[in-house]
Length: 326
Image (cartoon, rainbow, N blue to C red; front, side):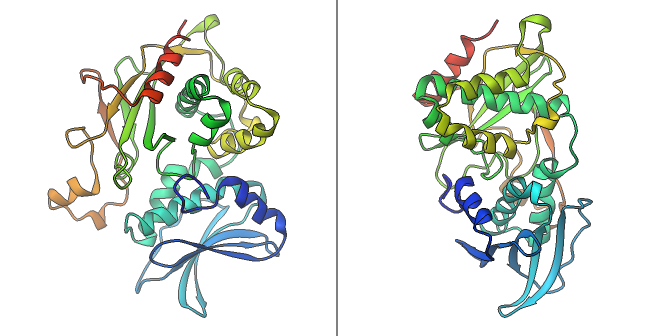
């Protein structure tokens, strides 16, 4: 299982793929959702109980299909990934859909659209990463590198949860969401109503990083990827590469936009009641019809906001990153 205890980890899912037999795996929670692997097609997907009069928006992705089927348990909605090359990336999408339906009580159609909007770039056509995507991955890798320095490479790698969990890291029992900006102000885009919502009783910390183009004295994304891999033992490198893929990296995209360095010292913020954010609760309190909101994206500016002191391990990791500033 992964860190949340709900889904198979990447290694377990890979074992399913290589078994070569049809498999159904129950995702714990309500409603009853099953993950299936069909090697005959080949395809992977989810089966979710259908609701009356449910309709679905066209996704615009050739590799992701949504269809209504009749099974022994009744009418079901199937979300299917049809390209073998994208099964590991598509698995992250399927986990995100299941979480939205079971943990956040989203309608299936709403969960699919929201998850595809957040994670769909993972299964789009190959091509160079945009500067925004590149900066976002660099931000996560800087946190991973900092954790590697203070917790060791193997422990740090288990904390990184790209693609298959609601938040980017699980650091000793607290969730961490990493936001990276290339702007002069500490401003960040939030891509959904749930991205800044804590999971259960766990604390949620937002780590704000600012990057700037650095010319010859900065670091290229492939260089940073290589530095972290070199610190890992051989037994951990395959897991690292799978996590990179789940975060959107492929060797075919290795056309970095430039060299980067930190613009400012990283800042940490506890996402609590007074933190600026929009969540399902705030929308409900405003007496808005959340069912009619198909997508929400907003920007927060933390430039004038005082940072907080995070738990020791996370604070030490951020300090380790700061020491690497040019």
